[in-house]
Image 1 (cartoon, rainbow, N blue to C red):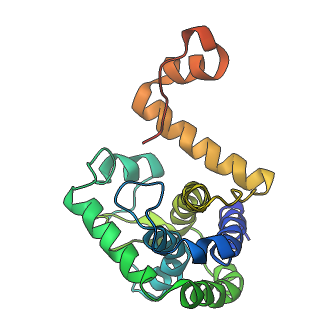
Image 2: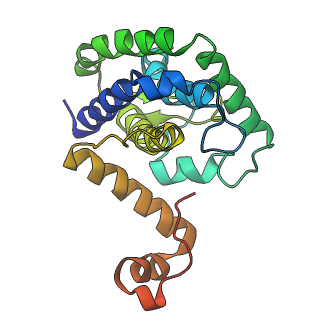
Amino acid sequence: MTDARADFLAAAGAAEALLRRTEVAEGWARPSALAQWSVGGLAGHLAYQVLCVPEVLAAPVPVEETVGLLEHYRRSRWIGAGVEAEINVRIRQGSEALGASGPAALSRRVSGTLAGLPAVLLGEDGRRPVRLPFWGAWSLTLDDLLATRTMELAVHADDLAVSVGAPTPELPPGTAESVIVLLTRLAVRRHGQVSVLRALSRAERAPGSIAAF
């Protein structure tokens, strides 16, 4: 199994455990730490990062061009878009619809999906093209898709944990490193290498932010 698949399964397992926490169920209907997201909607978005994987693998192999990770993010319409942008409204609505089933049903669905994924992923070629329908006319390799989902799981697990006062899940060191490397590459793409270098090494010259998104 490739590192990308192992990292994804580790992050998915951490998210699945967070979704089962009492604090998440108790806060389901409350606003989350993200503007215009409820806790239940944010939980639905977190769950989707796991649930989408068997869906894309069950779909026909796409014929659109396959691009690299940085090109994928360059093309992604949600990056830099406001909370009321059509793409972000659509993502929120889909996530809220997933969360509408309630915390118990959603966590069971994620647990059931995750139980079968190691065997499924073991039999797949990491170079196989896959795509999510809302991206646009391009694909990623399976391993690159899993890298994007691992990052989403890590970031939104933190969002959800903060929203309900639960501890943010700790990832295995290798998985955390993979997420941080991807976020760093995206931060360099957005802010330039000098800004990122200074933020990581020279507090007196650090820019105000090197956020990847």
